[in-house]
Amino acid sequence: MKSTISIYIIGLALVMLSCDDRNTATLAPEYLYDAGNQKVIKSIINNKKGTIAMLYGNNLALQSASDSLSKPNFGAHYTLVTWKQKPMPQWYGTKMNGQIYSIEHLKVVQRNETRFAFDYDFQTGKGYKPGDSRPEEKQRIDFITSQRAAVFP
Image 1 (tube, rainbow, N blue to C red):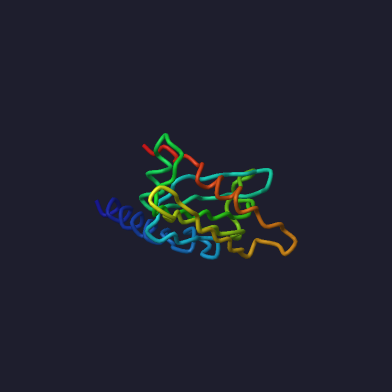
Image 2: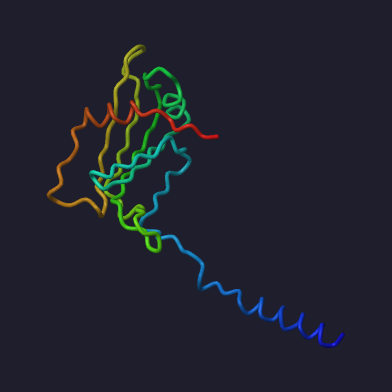
């Protein structure tokens, strides 16, 4: 009986000593982006360019991306964050987000009762190199507003 209790105590001590917080994974905060109260619409991976992008939007942007019609809603706000890819440690052949390459903000504003306009802003991140070409605004607006929402279960 005493030996059984001793074995349980030794086992419990080993379990308690084996728990160590030093081995927990930590996120690299310099590679994260806080989209505030915007929701994820879609993720985009471009292996040719070596980028990973995430499209965020408010409820109106999400509704536009979910509808079968491609017409954006007045008041829709989109944010497209693009990261450079980097190898994921401990996972051979897998890539993860590296430094932020660019952040693009797009707002659909009402010009008059039937027409709308776009406010577009392109910001560079740490992954953006001085020799990189800036995207053409009209193409980026068309690209962002044409994205369909990912289907979430």
